[in-house]
Structure formats: structure tokens, C-alpha cells
Length: 520
Ligand SMILES: NC(=O)C1=CN([C@@H]2O[C@H](COP(=O)(O)OP(=O)(O)OC[C@H]3O[C@@H](n4cnc5c(N)ncnc54)[C@H](O)[C@@H]3O)[C@@H](O)[C@H]2O)[C@@H](O)CC1
Ligand SMILES: Nc1ncnc2c1ncn2[C@@H]1O[C@H](COP(=O)(O)OP(=O)(O)O)[C@@H](O)[C@H]1O
Ligand SMILES: [K+]
Image (cartoon, rainbow, N blue to C red; front, side, top):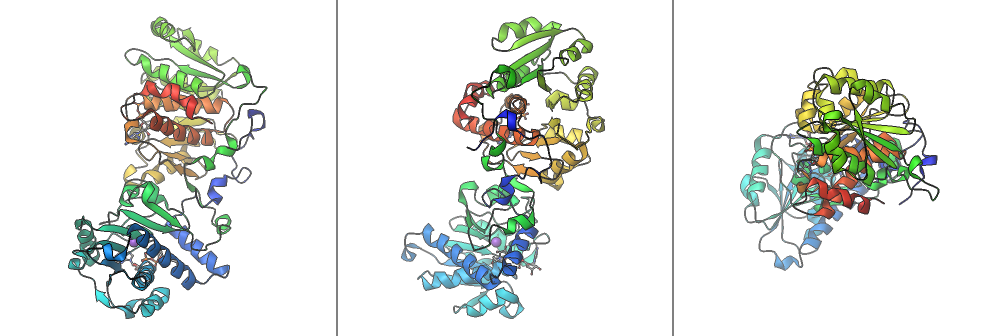
């Protein structure tokens, strides 16, 4: 892992000054359908013919099919290739040609006529020497393998009519191995949502990079799951990514490892940051304890838990490694902020929803101290989220970590029904803050439009208190100088890694000792 110590971490959020290497790397970047069509066009401009791209794409699909079976003679039924009206269908014709050459029993079905096809797809259809059959819903019956080449990046409206009937027939054929070319037909590659009917693929073969729809849910599952999505190199030069300037990526270490705080040999607790967590009130006292311990386990030098007098003795008794401090009024809490070493405040877990919490948050923001706002800290702003707005110039100082329920209440103007990615991006841009929209495909959005989609969370991470742990991890990394967007992304990734290590049946406090083991 490449790193830098906290002394050298740059203070800027201008990503043209600090380019995120992930957006220029085909392993990390996720190209939206129109961006992937642009990548194809840029490759053609660079001198690679579009026919060659399609030839390589179709051949790579055939290779994946061939690798999935030990020998063509092992197949009980044919390989059914379903071709649609565009270039995705063209890929299907190429794959069918190779598979026939290699001795596979191929049956190709087209919606419409060869003469309706145009461009490269028409050219590839002419080159196919086998029979072109008319596609009907019955055609996939008894198939051993179904190659789905109906629609890819060019899907432009909800699927209906004969296409919907075909897709339903494909999904009904449960014994067949369904392999989607580029995208399962019907999947919106930008949002991960089905547009009308959608193929449920076992395997997806895509080209150059993954697309957001392969990582967002339900698209990831409709594509066969992360381990069954193959990305094939078809000769598109990586340098096209520099021109495309895509802003969506998969949340993997490549995205942020260059800013990860590596502890210098001269480090001591006072230069590894000091996190202040607002302690809770009855009955959710444990939440802020989880947050403060997670911040400490993530490498913060010092963590203090500031508790209202009524909960002070319980919290002080329960915690050994955290400095527990008492306050009697909001004024008292804000007094803690005068400590110049304190560099991140976390408010929310178990804090209580209402005026007191609202005032505390506004007091922190007024002092311009970096702040992670979770749970009750967010809910205290329902109906008045505009008060959280930050100017997005300079360092980002605010991270909001809502789950879907909190997001919907806080930002009714950005409905999740239009896609989680878009909703998180809009809220981040509006608030001038990092928005971490939690879920099985957590999205980390920056006000400038960049966003990472997380894909390594196991289902068992969804248990009470794990969100409190995440808030502490984000604060812990920010305290060590990692910029808010990258700290949030890294924390989300390692939070899921910790859950993977903890295993099924884990509870939130199990994560705490594991965090330090999974962090670099
Ligand atoms: N352009 C290139 O150079 C390459 C393209 N490739 C393939 O080309 C695909 C993109 O090709 P296209 O842009 O032609 O798009 P598609 O083949 O995905 O589909 C576009 C066609 O479908 C129609 N259509 C869209 N939505 C529909 C709906 N709901 N119901 C009925 N018809 C609908 C459109 O009118 C158009 O005719 C990629 O997904 C990939 O598979 C690959 O061959 C690699 C190279
Ligand atoms: N289906 C799921 N699969 C994997 N992780 C999930 C799933 N649903 C939620 N999570 C994760 O579990 C955590 C729950 O956080 P949150 O909802 O804030 O819970 P709490 O408030 O109880 O701590 C988040 O990190 C979220 O991303
Ligand atoms: K397809």
C-alpha cells in the first residue's frame, strides 16, 4: 500500500490538483453507458477499428462460454444466442461464429431481420454462416447455455413487448446457464435498476471497465454477483479514461490508498488527532461508546467522550481507553472545542433527537471543526437540512452518514426511487458535504460529483450498532489527516472488511478489535 504520513497530506479538495488515481484505472472506474460508448469512439479515433473492437468483444464472450464447459459434447442442449437490434446483438453474432467454429451446438435467434441491422452489427451478421432464426419465447426451451445479446449500453427505454416476453422466458429457463453480454438485457447500466423486464444472469461478460449498474443493487445480483462479472480487455487504450473524466468508481483501495495515513516513526498520540464524540443519553448509551472505541481502533491518537452529567458515571465506568468528560449544558460542551488539538467531532449515535443536539451541531459547524454527523445528529435536522449547508470550497468539513430511512427524512427532495447514486450525489452537492448513503451498496458522494460505490459488505453487517462503528472509523481516519471524502471511503471499505473477518453472526462490538487488524 502506498501511503503518506499525516504531515504531507495535502489540504485541498480540488480533485484536479489531487487526481484520484482510481478514476484513471480500468479496475476501479465505472463507466456509465454513454461514457463507455465514448470510450469506444475514442478508441476508434485512436486508430482501432470498431469492427475489430466488436470482433474482440464477441471472441472474449465465446472464450468465457468455452471456459464454463469442459467440452462441447458435455452439453445436453444447445447454446442459444439471443440477438437484439443493436451492437450488443453484433457481439452475439461474433460469439456465435466462434462457438460454432469451436464445435459448440449453437442456435442463434434474432429479433427482427438481418436487413434491419446496421453498421458493425449488420456486418457481423453477414459474416455468420449458421442459420439465423426468428426469436420467439419458446426458442430458449431446453438450452444448456443462453447468451443474452438483446441490449447492452444502448438500452434507452423500459423493455416491453416481444423483448419482455423473451426475457421472461430466459428467466424461466432455470437449468440453463445464462451469460449476459455487457449488461443483462433490461438493466440500466447507470443506475443498477431494471428498466421494465430484466434478464437475471448467472455470469456477465463486459468490456474495458465495469459499469455502475454492475456494482449498484439490484444490478450486481442481476449480473450474477461480483465474482461472476468478467471484465475483458478489448483493446481500448487506458488513456481514453483521461479524456472521459468519469466520476464514478468502485470503492477499492486503489481509489484512496495514496492518501491513507501511514504512521510515521516520529508519531505520537498528539499528532495522530483527537476525536470528540458526543456521549448519549438513556436508553442508547452503548452507541456512542461503539463510536468512540471505533475511532480509537482506527488510529486516532486520543478520543474523548463528552457526556451529559446524567450519563457520565455509567460511561466512565464502562470505558477504560477513552477519556470521559462531563458537561451540564450546551455551553459546557462547546467549551471542549477550545482545545486546539481536537480536530474531529462526531455527533449522533445515541445523542437524542431535538433542539439540544441541533444546537450542538450548529455550534460545532460554526467553529469550522470537521464533523461526522450520524443518526440522531441527522434526524435533529429533519425539515431544516438547509442549516447544514457548507460552502464546498476548500477542505470539506462535514460528513453525513444516513441510512436510507434517515436520508429520506432529511432529503425528501432527492427521492431514492430515482436511484441511490443520483440521490447521494445531489444531496452532497447541495450540502457541500460528503454524503455516505449506507446500505448493501453504500455510496460515498463528494459535492464535486465524484462518488464511490462499495461492494464488499457482507449481509451480516446489517446489525444494530454497526453504523455507530462506521461513524467512529470515519472520524478516526479524518483525525489522522485523511481528507473527508477519502477517509469516508476507506472507512466504509475497512468496516466491511472487518465484518468479513468477523464472520456470520457477528455483533457490532465484535468489529472493534478486528478494525486494527484489517487496517493497513
Ligand atoms: N461501439 C463499439 O465500438 C462497441 C460496442 N459493443 C457492444 O455494443 C453495445 C452497445 O451497442 P448499441 O449502442 O448499438 O446498443 P444496444 O445494442 O444495447 O441497443 C441499441 C438498440 O436497441 C434499441 N432499444 C433500446 N432500448 C430498447 C427497448 N427498451 N426496446 C426495444 N428496443 C430498444 C435501440 O433503438 C437500438 O436499436 C455494447 O453494450 C456492447 O455490447 C462492443 O461490441 C464493443 C465495441
Ligand atoms: N443488506 C446489507 N448488506 C450489507 N451491509 C448492510 C446491509 N444493510 C445495511 N448494511 C450496513 O450496515 C450498517 C448499518 O448501519 P445503520 O443502519 O446506521 O445501523 P445502526 O444505526 O444500528 O448502527 C451500515 O454500514 C450499512 O451500510
Ligand atoms: K445483454
